[in-house]
Image (cartoon, rainbow, N blue to C red; front, side, top):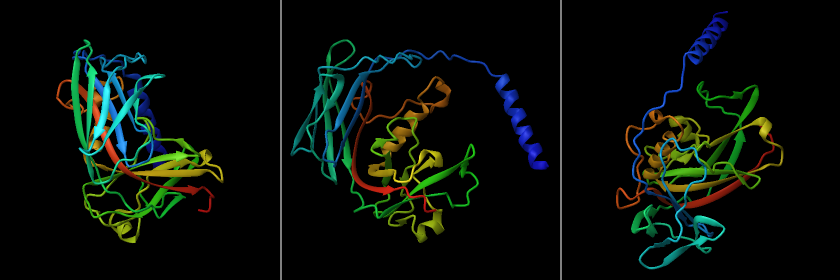
Length: 301
């Protein structure tokens, strides 16, 4: 009976709080229009992308963002230089020819582009491609078994299936493993609103991820979850495991928290950037090395 009363009290408080809220618009001062950069370069053999646009004010909901066209974009390791060519069908989107970067290599992104006034500016960023694990030994889809009450095992009456990777991590404690998840060749983690359960290895470098030693120290670590109704026997679930530096994760989460219509939700500072010089651009040049694995859902657990 006490549990029922507690639930009713929580529901009543939520109703009262909802009825007492109103929209508050905070006057956010307009800043200078800068160039926004979202560029990637990995050791995958593929066409890598750089997206250039102009920033806008915080409350602008206009999806017709002004893109940066006519830019020169390339990456170099001081030995090889790879150019990004603008796609004529997608202004502001620049792609390389199919090419693979190298692990344990520092790359420099160079951009010459018109600013909002049409004056040409030179931008640059540097990012290191870290090493990665040899392989992901296996992927397992099963209900969560970490005995952690804060992790849901039922979602609106639907069983939750968590995705667990098993692999030998590197000894480097600065590496963060960021999984990108696909189901039946459809990427599920391609926007800020998608959940990305990263695996930071500070304190656990060299552990076998989700092995007995790590479970004793930190329980199992899932990297994604599915509602059971979203899965069918035979579905192919793929993980592309990105090995990245921790600085990109700080950028990603601060950007995610600062996105939306409420400026109070974000950090009390501008989102970090590795694009230089300061004051001319925002965004990130992200490099990574990648290993991949796939499993077929068979509902054995």
